[in-house]
Every structure is written in C-alpha cells, then in structure tokens.
Image (tube, rainbow, N blue to C red; front, side, top):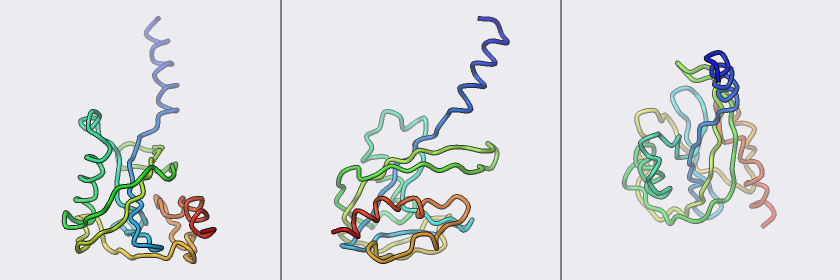
Length: 155
C-alpha cells in the first residue's frame, strides 16, 4: 500500500470512529439521577472509556466515573445493561466526535451526592412523567434516554 493509500484509509477510518462511554442510570425507585455540567449539558454519571482502562472490568470503570462525578459515598447495586445511546458533538481540541454509550442500570442504596469538579447541579427526575426534551442542549445525554423512559412509563 502506498503512502497516499494509507492516508486515505486512515481518513476513511477516522470519519467512522466512535469513542465508547459507559453510563449509570442511577435509580431511586421511579426517580433517575441527572446532572448538569459547567457547559450546560445534562448527563447521567459515567464517561468515556480511556485507553489505559481497556483491560478493566466495566464495573471498575463505572465505579471510578461515579466517584469522580457524584462522590465516593454514593452506593448502588449495579444491574444489567438497559440501553445504548449515541451522541455527536464538538469536542475542544478534537473537533466533531461521536460517542457510543452503554448504559447500566443501578439502584441507589444511599450516600450523599457530592458533584465533582465539572458538575454544577443535580436532580432526581420522575421517569414516568418528566419531559426529557427540556434538558436538550448541546452535548446533553438526557434527551437520548427516550426509549429507556418509555419502558418505565409502560410499567
């Protein structure tokens, strides 16, 4: 393969690249924990899996993300993967990125919420009645939870 063929292959690969995130749908009965970051985006705990975390179990990665974002005192029982989401946004220094998120459900069992350095607000929303579109802003994950919410409205 020539150098120009390698460049073309790399460019083609990059346009189809997704980063992978792991998220926690932290539930307290019919309530779901959501957080707002300093950029105005609404999210659930979790984040991108880093290169150095490749060999770690999902549970370990998720626990680290939860500790960073809502505090180490928060305890939960981790359940199964409940949904996936995709988001496209502009990332500082990288331009347009696509993120694919795998979302585990967890049942909140206690502990005080202590937002990390990027969090500015949190709330427990009612999954059966909340209008998720009101949380739509650039980079927000919460509006992407419509199919997950629908499952719980039908309960």
